Image (cartoon, rainbow, N blue to C red; front, side):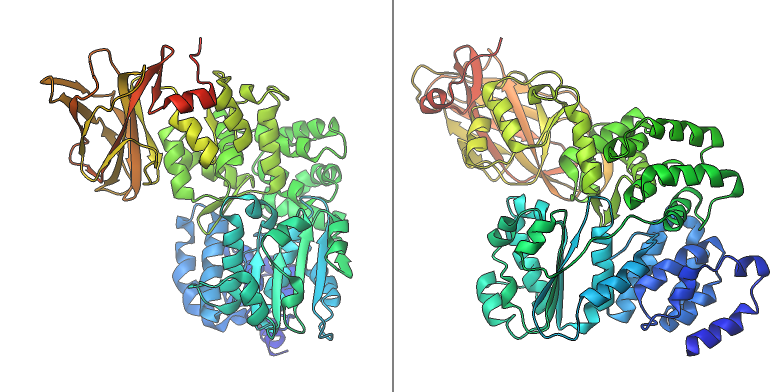
Length: 619
């Protein structure tokens, strides 16, 4: 009530045109129970930044943020990305308030009414351990609602954990361990977890009242494989599970299942307006067009966000063209509607988006930028454009996108040849990539692939054909276990081993290195020298100069070299040295010889390997 009195007093100082822009969402800010909720800060900040809402309004809501806003608001013009500016402030406020806060979309329209219904389903008066389900189609807002509920109800529990993208994460090689450790460290508030999950749940969780959110569960076996037993939590615990599968939620024992409805016309128009016009309602000249667009989006928040961002600052004729395109798309074809935003990208931006969807979701932005930069795809511009179009977001400096958008990108790749993965430009499924490599049926269409380097994949790479001279840079610092020779300096000396019916015609060399500079674009031109000490001959190569971005992180340079001039024979004593110049520090060297197998040079392959994998020359 005190906040309401202050607000009424302050309103007298507002200009009339500002007063009319304070929407019901801002009224909600001062009516909530917790005056220091970061969620409410997020709601108010867009208006503060645009000038529609004075900064003292936020200071009323958050007394401790006065200094923060005084320092940040004068610099807001330096922020190219308004959403990032808001995120930075909200994170700082969260630290000041010592709360666990999950970031919500900048314009979280419609969340308030749905949170009210979630509050009823939580049944806080009961001490039973309860599972609450959130079910619905992709893009309806299940994860957003789960995050909002987590933020609102966290302070009622002794421990909390939000396991985002549970289904996808559990499929990754280290995903199960990651989920287990996150659950333990979140609830026990410790990072040095050394015990197993089953033991911890049995002994540590039994008496704890916890809130756990399992986001995007696809199959009950995923929960079992991570060894999460929902019955092991203490009295009064609540487990919120989001899924597209209502039957799955019933299997987990969820008595209360909430299925979010599509946004109504008013909510849809407001959400579209925030993204398309950065205001709570459209300009009069665009109102009719906006209402038609809302009708085509069918109340799906994701569609409003993506299409609204796509139409930001576009002309009336461009809006009309977009509406005509939507008119020809079946009502239930969500991906086709979302693809309109993809079609509006430049060719380079399309390439970046497809690479992200196939390979880089969940990875560090800086790491991905380094790779894209090496491909001359101009990531600084491209990634920002994709974010502005709501096709991706950055969370903790990692690249994130909605599953529907990821699936749309992968489906675009499949369109080239629906049933023949060897004709796809990108191979993201390790099984597809392994099949193409093992059967030598790749084509010129293949631009990139993702491969789990586990036992079968390692063996395929070990026997992979060396068909040209040159080198590549590989992230990481681990050398393959199957290399023939290793040393911790920039050179390696070895004796050519005896082989049966195999002639050494070249070699593959691996050199871990670290840059002396950070985030600097530079030329590299490694020099490779091979000295045959037995024969007294010297062979050297200097591959073509290329440009790479240098980081103070460990990477590996891998080079393949074939030459009839090597003249290597069994028993020869050989030294191979790598010279990168002054900018890179070499941390070691590893080498395997390449042998001539049926007129095909194969690195480090044995007769047993040749027989097992039926290695053959490609025509």
